[in-house]
Length: 250
Length: 250
DNA sequence: AACGGTTTTTGATTCAGATCAATAAAATGA
DNA sequence: TCATTTTATTGATCTGAATCAAAAACCGTT
Image (tube, rainbow over all chains, first blue to last red; front, side, top):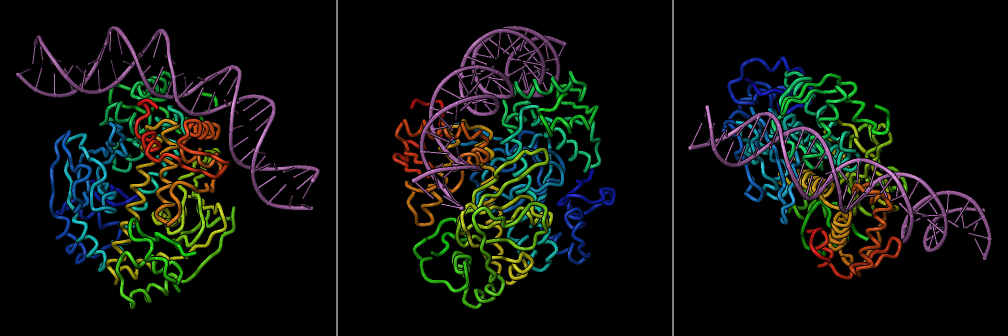
């Protein structure tokens, strides 16, 4: 199974189905429009792969940063563990996404990255990426877009945490998952969540019981079906409404 | 008054007090260690200045992105206005900080930037910055650190919004302001807030009444004095404790 | 200085979500 | 397979912050 949607927001996923020798490389390049020579230059950089078993750490907070990681397959969470035991999941990450961007700022990782299923990543030595970026402007530009997209994503989470109610947060979360699965060629209405209710809660600023109740409520209203980690969305439109306006009638 | 702390986290502020012909340029370069030639190259890019009066927009969501803005003097808020009237202040920005990073991702601004006092910014055409970055690696590297720092900052806000109580959030906010004023050579214990209680509330995920009550509480405990927008911190250490652990005794 | 609008403070009440608690279901591993 | 642990659901209660409301302070303008 190929990594999909790599390094990119919206492009034709079907084009990625072709075979690919060098890891997630073609995905990394495709939307940028590199020629073969440039791809081979890049290939020397993004060659190392690494397997992370379920529950394993890809990296930990405060260790030295040297490489970014592109998720070739699998599923990760990143989380911050504050002194005083406060913990916060800052994101869930799927195939094709890039991990470690926060570490550039101080050359130290600022969070833990933990695999939620057996996963495989490509290592991208950051110094090399910067070096190559100098000779392939479109790659550098693409990298900047990825960093910026991460900022936009975080702002979205801030809106969620700052102004949404429990049910809206969960609807928002499910729609986000749905969309990301869809981009990768999976069903947008039927999927398995990899994380626990507690992890969802941490990400959404809710307690696990509240998450569970919100799931139950959405199920009662037959907007979704919940079977433990399996989610079936029956009514995408109604779920979108849930996200938007809490005050409106059911 | 010179912009301070520009483009940088921690360095000797006093070195910035020297006069500076080309806007915030020296600050932009100083921590990166550019030579005079490189500075002059950069100077051609970062020359345009722009004044924004109190209440004015530096940019609005969904307008085309072409330049970043370095705050030469003044104070801004950035905020997202969702369809449905949901609004969220995503940040407060002071002299020396860079605005517009979120817009790189889609070439459209994703939020509004509004001056909270009469302000002045330097325009930094982004295409030019990328171009020059190719020839001055340390500048590019520095720029990457700035983007990454923004991500780290946002993660900090996510922790705040996801797991802190009202009083902790306000303590956290005040300490953040304090530190940023200190970096710029101002008092870390006595300063004027530029934003309203409502804006603080939006940023912290609280209603303005809750913000006001939290201020009053901290004042009663003589940790701070509040005189409308003026804040005097009497006990920094105790304020830090407030931030850390809500459960501990007062 | 007086005016009108905005901002802030404070009180009373309500409510969403946290907390406490107990059970059930699922996953894991021997 | 069964035993143990982890995860999820659901109920009862409590609480921190939202909401509603009213007054006071502050600001910019004329």
